[in-house]
Length: 602
Image 1 (cartoon, rainbow, N blue to C red):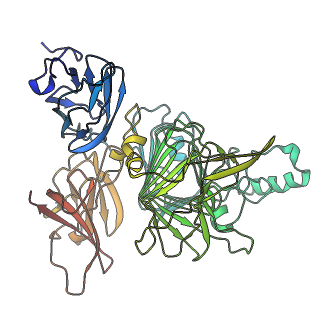
Image 2 (image 1 turned 60 degrees about the vertical axis):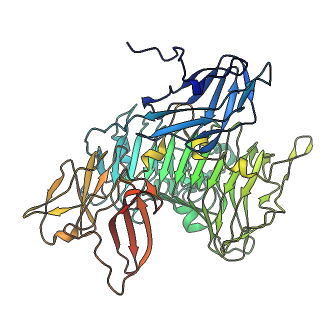
Image 3 (image 1 turned 90 degrees about the vertical axis):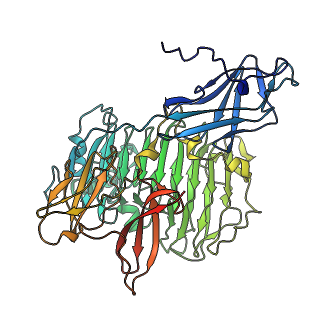
């Protein structure tokens, strides 16, 4: 009979302390446990109240931090992956008795294995948007309107290449919208809209008592002419008011900021709720391009995205993890224009705030001095880790502007920022003093401007994003490997790709269809046909080589490899020296790409 989870476990000798030492009652997950959920926490339960000692705990060989409450030690572990064995090792003296510090644990270890990733059910996209009329809708908003309310699983909308001139509104009752673009270069949602109703492109949300009849008549004329139709009183081009939104491969343009290069606010993207994620998307404006969630408890994950602006163009609240993103500063070339500020946070209790990890910062104009950010409201938090500067960026030695809104930040810091030549940027003069004018005079204070290596190591996806509900947007962004195509007399075919729900067929670089089958009829040159797998979140995998193209063919004498990236068979990007079978995608000097299978021996 299966024992209850909290049945006292008679641990092996390695898990039992001396009679005069600290005794372990139970480890969770249990030693050698199988099929452990990837959202499981790792806990060590003792027979008495404990405190941290001098020893270390390691998780698969990496030192991890433990937090203690009463008799329970909880390890801060990385997020778990499917089908993986993990080993926890606890050094002698990692924990001591709270009542008697001379009582400490002996060294011990335990291991467990997570469950295999469940296979999703085959399915096609729920809707296809195509501007040429070949899909289910010609408008992105129409596809959103057609989605059912109150979903608990992803509703997959595929947006084909095209320019969609419309505002985007996703209401609160439409969670789990997954908006998947075909190609960010050519899948564009755009509109000209800003926060001032009296301007061509303004919106409907201002107090009419503050403006003249003539101003309102001007606005009404512009509104009726289509400049701000369907804005619903929201000044953002794309306004996502629902949880569990995911988008990839789409460019979001607010044409007011992008074209005018001027004030006022002109948001390209604004997500208000928890659990929103973007992969390989782009956002363009000038002031306030990207507005993050309004609540301190809400999370957002932004991976491999491009965000462009000049004035406070990433701002607001929430715990937001920007992973390997490209941030670009633009100018309007007016002589009065200052160089720019990236962030203007208004955190009011967020645990982590904004984390920029392994991001790239570029500038349109060389030599202009820019700030990483300035405080807006409440108690902002922002950390840049391993920020890479391009050769046009001139980062102000202070890093952060000392005066703007009504806030004294908690932490405004950057760690291991590098110049274009690879040298560390000099951060010895970083600002830590901030002030603003309060109702009773000047309010000032100090913020943390440096972080240690140990502190930097804690600003990870694992710590910031999953939370108590174990949200895992990193799994959404994983690319499934490319199918290997074979050619028959009338069909191309391929082996099923694990975890694929369907397959996208392309011909001569153009989308053809999605299919549940692993074979498709072809005409003409088989090498012009390609296939990619789609995962359960709608994320499209690595595109195959052309049918009948031998993988690994030698390069021509005039063709060289410009860059390459490797993926394991689950579609995760990995280092090129990772043991096992990998898929390598090479970008060649002639502008083409080639997919190669490689086997690294253990």
